[in-house]
Amino acid sequence: MGLTGEMGGFHLPELLQVLGQGKKTGVLKLYGGVAEGTILLRNGRLVAALQGTLSGEEAFFSLLRNLEGRFSFVASPRDAGDTQPSAGMRPLEALLLDATSRGHLNED
Image (cartoon, rainbow, N blue to C red; front, side, top):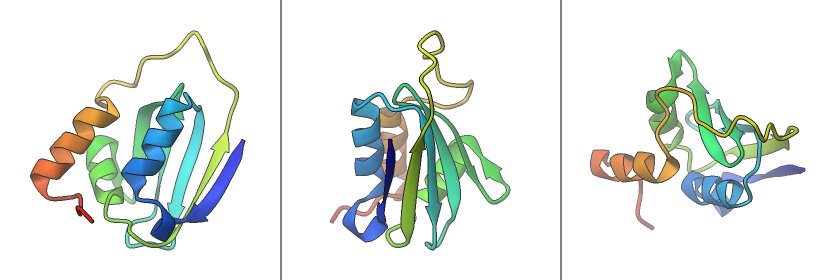
């Protein structure tokens, strides 16, 4: 499955929730916005985030600044035997709660 679009039509949390609910595995790339980077998903769970010199949760929080630009998601084969996120990446819901408390999310 491939998916591309404009960030203006989706906020990153919404896009990640859709991919998570679909238990998608693959690479989500964000470009053309204020923070370009990559988020890796495995069976719908965040396993890594990269943005410039940042990685992990700090990269994720930085990528949340993207309200414009483009995204592309390229699915890769599922690895059903490996469903645990990498060390250091909490579940999406926990990251979004933290982002809200830090003021990284705009409530439109």
